[in-house]
Image (cartoon, rainbow, N blue to C red; front, side, top):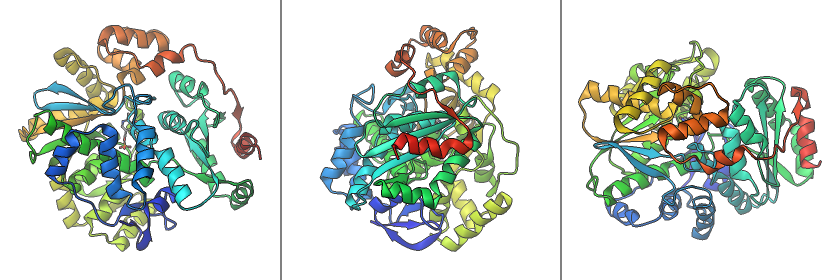
Length: 496
Ligand SMILES: *Cc1c(COP(=O)(O)O)cnc(C)c1O
């Protein structure tokens, strides 16, 4: 198995190279040269395994340059009951008849990004060892909140790595700030910057691409790498939970081997739903992949019309992790759908960079319609949906997940499709206690920890230990720097 670039089909690298490099030099994303198959016999066997064993099975098909022992080390380090608050790792809850919530938020930061960021550090350091890079890996992250914390938890105390996170001083919630500034670990650093998220992002990019900084780092025996969501090492782990869920549904007798399911995903950067597409192409019987967006509905329009147009207002919503106008991972899907035509991808994504718009061919439009359904809802509908399922099914879900539930209800009403359906639940409701309480009509005039208490009274879902512990945790990182001081901070933190 090799990996090609979406912008140059001639590129041929191993999975270790794809993961260590992150993005191809031509600006394209790495995609597998072929999609491996799972059979229904495999599915029956997987039903008897733990999540880590299922992960080993799927990874061994994609990371063919890794030894079994290497993959085992990665999956056992990540998917254990020290890092996750359930032995099942990904939990499957019943919402109503034939509809299941795939809870992907039982990891240390209570959001689905843990599913990939818990294992990425091990995939990355193992890749670096295999390639004999012999350098300490330094991860730089600019964050608007969730990714920074998930990356910090993933990389903390992982040998041969160091992680530094920058966040905009006034651009994250009080809870998110507390999560980051109290971060434990010997190899972590957290720093606020004076500016907004774009300033932090641009600062990190400038440091990444500065050759002088790179050579100073190299002289000190270090190299930069990225924990960015376009890294194949973040996408591959997401395929596993779809394969695992299908195996679990078969084992539990909810479906028969070969029965189709729908998969609904609250979508931002298109990584999570793309992993569902790969699972389908591997042989998991999927009827529709349902792409749910908030008021930032560029993907709804795209899937319905074949025109991608980012020239539209940006909305700040109560599902902030989906507030996105450019969904990077769509490039991978389109590469597969257009027959791996790299020239076509260069044209479309060139146009996107130039004018913010491109239109796909009629063939691609037809496949998009066939494989996907897309819908969106605004904040008012999101809150109504939270209240409705809280009232009807005594299930409390977060704002992102509610977008998916609402779009699924619309889909069902429009099509009458009764196929059993798995809805990806991407965050614990406690991460967005204020919005969730508001939706169910509770009083929200309190600080973030009091809100957590109130949500517990309303939902009776155990408060995640990591959030409960936050209140009494010591703040370790208080530094704020100007944008142009970010490089100095990095060098100081690394002791260069
Ligand atoms: C990141 C995130 C999403 C969006 O996932 P993509 O893979 O970017 O589409 C949805 N919900 C939550 C809670 C997230 O953190």
